[in-house]
Each structure stands twice: as structure tokens, then as C-alpha cells.
Image (cartoon, rainbow over all chains, first blue to last red; front, top):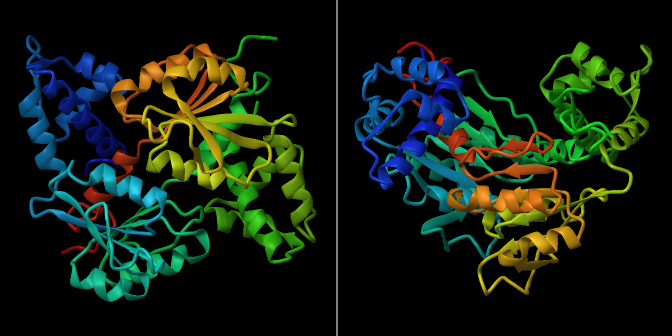
Length: 212
Length: 212
């Protein structure tokens, strides 16, 4: 079983490799990839071994081939369909990032309760009425839900997604949500991230600041 | 020295307490706060002790008083000014969340290179030319920078922020940035979060899924 942290790093490696490919790089050593990813060479080698990949000590890894191997490992061959619930700024940011980047991960729709958005296209995808969430998600065979609604309705939205067959949730609502065991949930708490930085900005709290 | 993880949890507790205050709750026990925060009661008690706060075994914590204590601990009394660089969907999502929520943490401006945005107001704050980043940030006494620009210009933007006096950076660009030791950096990698969920959505990869 490959760990969650390894999956996260593989996702990062593949983006770094895409950048190298765009520059026509042929080969890369584990220590170079490690430095780009903010990790160590042994960790890169372990991560890639865990998906059955090893480089040559003389030439390192072949960039294109390694990127392809990570793709086959991470991506569902038949594709994954996702939906964004809450078509505000954050929802649109996620949609526009994934619009054409990952053929195997397709955000197929968004949901909102704003009559001006319902029935329109947002980031080239239909925006549906959140009141029809359960039936529409089931009909479209959507398996991944991105929750960008306010905290007070986030659990309700999540429950409907799960009832409709969703087994993975990326939650941005500032509230811890609870789901059955078979549902994989990732919480991203942007407020906490921002407030942590705000705290450590101060020279009297920053652990690395020079002595006053 | 209070740890980064504790700071993150304090930020979460204070949001949970704000919700309780809105419901006119007077008191709360550590195990209740722990359950809302997805942690344990001893951890809550340790976190609050680390800022010199302790509840009574009989009545728990006073909600309003505890919220106030966390505020005084986390917030800089003279306030912190922040700027968002890259006024796209994600930048606007961050700005609109913080627009009126934290009097002591003020996003004072945004920066972009789009002529249609420069000179306009975005989320009720002026949007400036990214070409003037360094001078404007220094003049406005901005200490926290939120980077929501594409990866290829993120380091350059970060360097200018730091040159202008910024000591805390929240980076959303999918690239690891490097700064002097006294700069506190938090990386938020939304693509990795999304791709992790996409991986674990599949029943054959979800560690908790029932056996097929």
C-alpha cells in the first residue's frame, strides 16, 4: 500500500516532470528532482521504487518515461469525474486549474443555489441547481466532490454527495466533516494557513527571526 | 515557544468558538471542543494551557472569554497588513473571505499584470500594477504576501515581496519557493490535494474501502 504522503509527492513530481519536458530535458537525477520538490534523493528513490520504477546510476531517470509511469499509477484508466459544489471564487479557481490539465480527472459540473449561475456555463461546464445535487451527481457518475460552500451547509452537501455515490471529498469549508469509512476526505483549511502565516510574520513570534 | 501545529489549532478553535457565540453558548468542555475540531480533549487542554488558559472541571471554558484570549494571543495588536499577488479566482477567494472577518488581519491591496484589473477595486481594495510591487508594498507597510500567480513567476514575485519587507508568505503557486531564514513560508498545494483525493476515490486504492 502506497502512503498518502507518497501519493502527494508523486503528484508533485509529475508536475515538475511536465515542466522539464516542456524544456526538452531528457534525463534527471534523483537529487535534482528532490531539490525541486523540497525533499531528499533517498526519498525520491523510495517513492519511485514503490511504484516499481528505478533509474540508472549513470543517467538518472528518463523524464518522459517516468512521467508516463506516474500517470499510469496515479490515474484511473477509465477516468474520474468530479463536481464542484459552490461555484464562487474558490470553486471557479479549482475548475479553471483542472479545466484542461488532466485528461483523466475531469470536473464535469458545478452546483450552486444562485439563480444567476444555475443553467449557465462556468469554466465551460454546466452549473446545476444544488437542490438537484443528489440525482444529478448519481446520473453523471461523479465520484469526487469538491466542497466550497459555507460551513453551515457543508455537512449536508457532503451527505448528499456520498448518498449519490461519491467516495472522495476535497473539503474547503472551515468545518470538520464526518463520512462513512469508505469515503476518503481531504480537508484544506485556507483560513488556518493564512492565520498561521499572520502569526509568524511578527518578528517576536517567528522562530527563525534574528534576535531583537 | 508555541508550535506551528498549535497555532493552526488555535486558529480553528477560535472559528469554532465564534460559531458557538453566535448560538449564545456560554460554556464548553474540552471534549466538546475537541470533537468539533477533530482532536482529543487532552490536546485541547494542552493547547490552551500553552497560551496560559485553563477551564474549570465543573463548567469547562467560558466561550466568550476563551475566544478573546485566543484573539489576544494570535493577533498582532497593531494589526497585520497583507497583499494578494495575482488577482485571479483564487486571489479573490482569499480576499473575499478575509474582507471583514478579521479586524487585525487586513488584506490591503492586490497586484496583477492585467490592465483591466490595474487601477480598479477588487474586493473593495485597490489593485495595483505588479510592476510596482516592491515600492507599493514597502510604502503600504505590508508584511504578509499571498502568492497566487503562475509557478513560473512565483519566485520572482516572492523575492520582490521579501525585498520590500514582507516576512510571511502564503504560497499557492505549485512550486517550492526559497527565501531567507527569517521569512515564514506556508505552501498550499491545491493540485496535490485534489490529485490525492482522485487517487483514493477508487475502491481498489482506498485504504478503507470494503474488500471487493
